[in-house]
Image 1 (tube, one colour):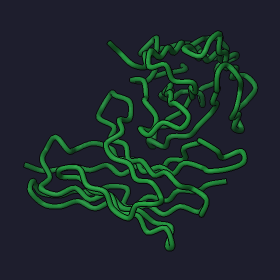
Image 2 (cartoon, chains in turn red, yellow; image 1 turned 90 degrees about the vertical axis):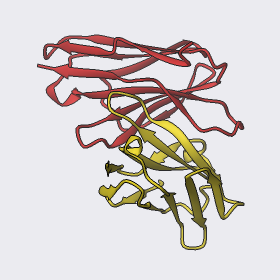
Image 3 (cartoon, chains in turn green, cyan; image 1 turned 90 degrees about the horizontal axis):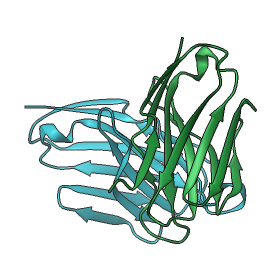
Length: 113
Length: 115
């Protein structure tokens, strides 16, 4: 069973569109994250949620809005997509106080044309 | 906030050689340092980690060392194999304030092991 699953795996869309990426984890973790990986492979945190509460909100355009309906899900909605939003987006989860670091999903490759 | 620097950005070795990747961090309060391996088309996977009360940790062919005074830590891979080829990331976890529990990643090292 996949521990952290993201959908879709690939997303190609036009500038100006609105799109969502979904993430679910079945590890029972209490914290979930969204990371953005650019073309140079750099991984940068965007958001983190702990038990449905926003904990980390880095300097991300407000076109990006995370939503956590429950602690097993963290979705990312992006409005008015721009070319510069093209990247791979990774969802991850962790359990506070538990050794083992983050568990990452397999990523969503977003291409804005 | 935390800043993590990773070197080298690319590393090419022959099968059987050793590979070493080094990272430095800025926040002396950080106390957890994981290493991730990312294969093509996949998400990063934890391969080894170390906490600030330990100087060295080993797991088969991989080892990590930590020098908390100098604020640097390194990944050592011995007897490299072609399947070790991947992008490797170091990271440091914040210990307090707004950095608590937040992983800051290094820039990544592309390791290529030639048969």
